[in-house]
Length: 316
Image (cartoon, rainbow, N blue to C red):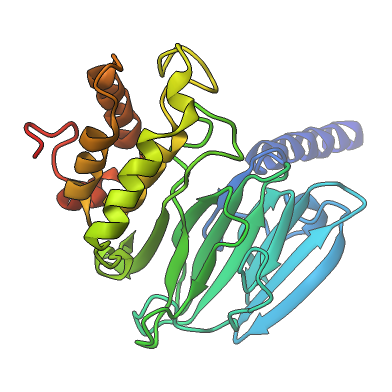
């Protein structure tokens, strides 16, 4: 009887250990947002974060505790607890409480970033690499913990959340990297400025804040002349068949994008028409490829009302 009792205890313990092991989140998961009761309230050593890393920062706000960890592991992690229970655990190369990515301007934990009347915390994430990638996480620290937004800043190490229009709330100021490496090197890749504002439950393009002044007729004429006289027109290659020096100046689509994102799509198409050499073939192909790339932008649904059809049905 004693032997049978011991065997039953051992068997039950083994099954319990297997069940706990199966229920634990994978330590290799790059992003885990879980409700407070998702994790077993046992030892923190069992959780995806910190897993032996050294604590690098800690901020308390009410019932919440936000911690970052790194070293000796090259990858760091973020852990947010409420009343001692883990509500968020993320792993990436590095995290910074209070974002912004490289800016020294820190957003105090508990700031109402979105304008909803709830306290938030902003955490900047760097995935590693020479210039990519950066993400700004916005978490709500209210009666319930919520992930409000993951703003993918791409290569924008200078991206920030700040009160641009002085209305008491925060806007994201960064770039759209849809055209990175498109027909050119990274260093030459255009990345038009974008401003996002929290509206209707998410961060959307704030086209009113992105609007730029109309260029004077003299400035626009000079821009056309500059693009038309570029040496890059001399290349015999066609865009889409090469990685760099593709026969169309980068200055053309860079300025087209700046004009479009600044609220002057009609001038972008004028620039194309007036700067494209009459003897140069492939204009229609370029327009098709340019629009296909633009349509792939995460922000195209917000941008489309300002840009209109791309390619346009008719151009002046």
